[in-house]
Structure formats: C-alpha cells, structure tokens
Length: 407
Image (cartoon, rainbow, N blue to C red):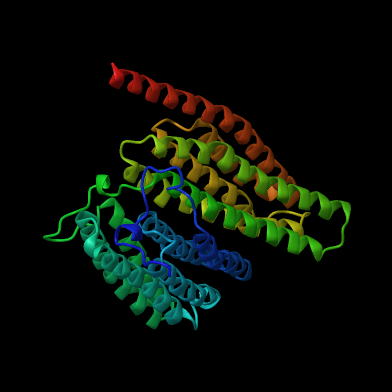
C-alpha cells in the first residue's frame, strides 16, 4: 500500500541533482496557457486597433501573472504529491474558463473572466497558506501577505467585471497596478511588515526552466498561426517569401532567448547569493515583455502573409516593429537585471527598430519584415558573443571566491 507523503515530502527539495526538474503535471498545467496565448493573439487580430492593443496588454499581464505566481508556488511545493496535483487540476479548470472568456473579456464575458481570475489567484494562495501551516513560518507569513494583496485586487477585478466600457478598463488597470506593485513592495502589510527577498529562497534552475517553457508556449503559438495562415494561401513566390521571413523572425526570437538570455540567466541565478531578487526582477517582471512581444509578432506574421505588398499602414507597422521591439526591450531589461551590465546588443536592436518606424509607410510589409529580420539576426550573433563573455566573467568570479574560501 502506498504511503501518504510526510509533511516534509509536500515541499520541493533543495540542493539535489533533480530538485529543479519540471514535472509532468506542470507541463500538463501549461496546456491551458497554450490556449490562453492563442486566444490573446486571435483577439488582437479581430480588433487590430489602438484600443485592441491596450486590451491585449492588460489581458496579457493578467494571464502572465496567474502563471508566474503559480510557478513561484510550485517552486516550493512538491508537484508529485496528491494535494498539489489536485490543486493544479482545479487551477486548470479555472484557467480554461478564464481563457475561454478572453475574446469577450471587455464585453459580455467580463464577469466570468474576472471571477475565474480572482478565484485562481486567491484560491491558489489560500491553499499555499494552508500547506505551510506546519512548514516554514516566514514563508507562511509571506503567503498571508500575498493573500491579502490579491484579495484587495480581486475586489477591483470583480467590480470591473460587473461594470461596463471605460469603467471596466479603469478598474482592471487599478487591479493590475495593485498586483504588479506588490512584489516590489515586498507585499507590505500593516503590522505584518514586508517580506525580504532572502525569504524567497527559490530553486533557481526550476524557475529559469519554467519561464523558458512559457517562452516556448508563446513561440509555438507563433509557429502555429504562421503555418495555419500559410496553408490557406496560394503558394506563390510572394507568399512563400513572406512565409520564410515570418519563420525566420520567430526562429531569431528563439535564438536570442535560448542561446543568450536564458543561458546567461540560468548561469547567474544558479550562482546568486540572493536568487529571490533575481527571480523577482528578471523573471517575474521582464518576461512579460518577452511574451507580449512574441504574441504581437505572431499577429504581425498573419498580417504579412495576408498583405505582403503595398504600403504599410501605421497600425500594421506598429505591430511588425513593435513585437520584435518589445522582445528586445524585455531581453535588455532581463540581462541588465541579471548581470547589472549594459546589454548593448539588445538595446541597439531595439533602437534600430524604433528608428525604422517613421519610414515604415514607404515600405511594403514584406520589405519591412525583411529589415526587422536582419536586425534580429545581427542581435543573435552579437548577443551570443555578449553572453559568452558574461558567463566567463561570472565563472571566473565564482572560482576565485571558491579558492579564497578554501585558503
């Protein structure tokens, strides 16, 4: 007969060779967010306006926030135990409701989206507080603080879901401001104080891998949308050139992240004396820009395939340059937060894309996309050399510190 896990077995181990391993239930849980990312990109395609872009940003912030907060929780809880698995399955159900509500989140499904989102955030955090009833006292108090902050923001989510038009937008912006400010304030609560980042003793390898997997989810949506659109078109020389360019841009985004940013981030967080600070600043916040940039780039691929020739209108130009631009800006902030250095390759690429925007109206979508692809390829090459140099410096520093401690 299988034994029930001990209280200690309910928590993720630290310092072992497999302590950072991502479990199958976590991968299964991520499938809900494959659907969510698909809904986000399709929603922008259906409402390709400034208002639609604002709504995309807000909904992307919400989707990312429920996912990253869950990644933090599973960094401490053991996903191989029955209570945690059941919690993740319950969150999947709420996540499906939330994702299904995305297309009409600012319409008829607003209250459903808000209720599912709030139950997801508050329910998961309350469960974690209960799990830590016999665990580390400091972490339990930390999650009590988080629960209070999410309960406060939940009031704004529900009120916004019940409101209409601009009132809903204003209330949901307020809710997101509360939630996004909370970690940087240490989830400060009167009488309970704030949580120092030293308490967030995360398993760095697990956090880095989880965020990398979400980037794969977003890139996968871009590949699927590009392939599905191309399959419905006549395969002419023009459409095949547009298809190749769209794929090249997506591949470049993958290369920039996994060949340089992810590798450097994993290296630094694994050797950091305060991994909680790195996880908060570099992974929790800046990855939102990366994910949003990929989603917008997927929409740009759809526009490119549909209309490769002619002049590029301002909204299309904003999407075609803004997607890769957001991704490079996020990469620059990520590298700066991790290593504290000026990330020249990513900032330079971002500035070049920004400078291209005034001239976008004189170019066809295909030519504009080709120029964006060239910029990204240059960043790939330059970013690789930049990352290799940083990792060598970090390894040298760690080795010197080890030699000093032995003497």
